[in-house]
Image 1: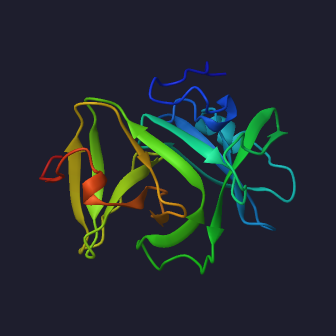
Image 2: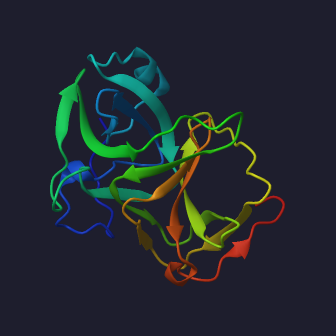
Length: 212
């Protein structure tokens, strides 16, 4: 079990169960297909752990990946009327918390195109000073920050009309996402979420060049 360490940018008022432990490591999600609720194991695990895990009915394993941020926490579970501890349960010796619920899911996008989802969640993500934060700028001018990376390190090509860019941080930066945010998921589970307005960025974004 990975020791719980609260990043200095996470308010002390945030309950421990709301905080993702070591988000850059592998984490697992399970899905209740009856309700569409997504439950996250806030502690990291290995790929072997994921393969061996057997969720209780009606839950199914919905994926494993790495966050792209250095700290993250949730303010409340979907449908809750005020901020507070996330709804939680224990399964197979692991604790899961209810973090998200897709809104009007209409199926996966074809081929390698990203699937666009509106998601009921209350998520704050953060990046540490010295990090390079990857973004994409969509044709409408809105910015979306990278949320997750694939478990195996694979990177799928972005749509031709997306512009990759980045921000190099000189201090910690926390992003309070809109509620609900829009999330673009690729088939390898890399994802981008937002929108984040240019005014909310810590500095002007720079276009990513070859080798970035």
